Length: 313
Length: 296
Image 1 (cartoon, chains in turn blue, green):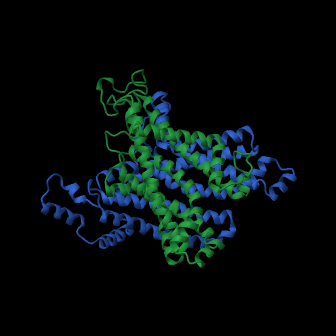
Image 2: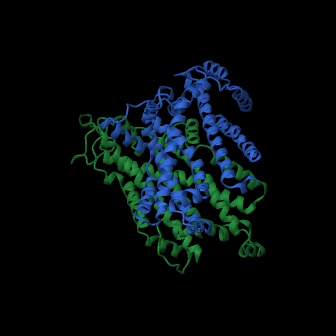
Image 3: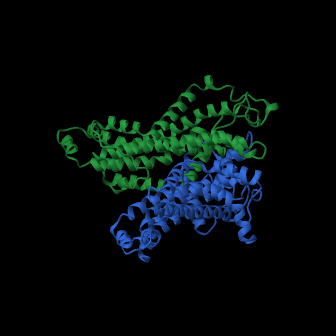
């Protein structure tokens, strides 16, 4: 099992180098120059050259990339072009907000998705089964950020059930922390929840038709305990795959929800750095997101080994 | 074929004869959801083309005295923060969404389909390299890549959609490659090569017809995904430039005014939702039609 995990890790690591390299290459070959954006109106050629030199932009791309990788491995992501702040600090300070939001959204997705799929599978083609199927397939088309706006205007602005927009760290107490995350988490978790429900319901349907389930039912076990004790583990594999894919989407979606709910996360930072062409911050954001996605994919791969020992070889 | 037996909504269709295309189309037309979805999209396209004729007002005409008004006889869907008519902006926004969707899905198709067929037909080191690159693109967070590309090329709807198209191309690549590999060693392909057909002719005449049906499905789903992606990029201010109307940028205004004009979030949101849903159901109709024709 450990060797299996190690192999997967080795396969995943190159991505951490490739994606930032692609960004470097893109920025290098793109028209326009961040130095011009920083120099203000009507800059002299000397001033442009000075800014380029200060930012290290006059060096060849591979040299800059090599330097960036070397510093990144030492935890240094450079200094923001705009804010004159250390990028590592900037990202780490904001990462907890984004990670909290993503975790809450994923927990909502797993809990509700599994709950509805299990309840639906108790009576295949029953009324509840059909409602779950219908609602989930419609929920997949709901844009998360729009749902976020609707939830906010309904529960925060009109009914005042939730605190004003913003974010409080976990250190302020679990309840306070959660109260700021419930609505954006729900908005962000709706789509993965619907997918988990559909996927788990469909794979439970397949598993529940197999012989060992028939055997368990013949021994007189109730439907619920058959589903929970015998079917769930085998039906879980495709669900884990769906979840793995979705983490990257949820991470992306957190950008819009952070802006709607005015949360000091990475989303606002990323959008601002794009508009200002703040390359170091952007690279830091890319590296952070890629790392998260690589880690999650790794966990997904390892979980295949847990659910299905045949994969481990 | 266990997958079809557990399909959530069972359809009582018998297999039918005829060419793949006609039976596929007939199978699709028999499903109400597919017809409704297709009808909605058709209507949307007509409205988008005829936007200047259909729209009751100039979408950019400001009327600051009537800002953020709820729906009324004069403005059926109310007005926005500059007093512009929301209905007219929704109608013109349909143009942006559809053009953006076609740009993104079109680019993804143009990149993914030929590369996928080449990878599946030629095999060898070229395939290994292509698969690696596409896999790397698939495991990168899509919006992050889109944001990066927009950062490099500058904000703007075409740049944003180029980014989305590039990101979606691995979907087309995978399907094209898999379907090519499926038929690569069929007797009729080998016969075509033995008869002296050039590689291009074999691919165009014999492989492409097998690859296209599943590609139609991917295209439909991708068009929906592109509409959703365009709206979130425009929402973030990385898509259309003001004052042009886009459903996504209209939601930016709605989010900023949710305390005074809560109704404003509904028209653009519902339009995005219905468009994405329709593309999904259209794709679903294609998929069902495909599994049925394959089962024959």
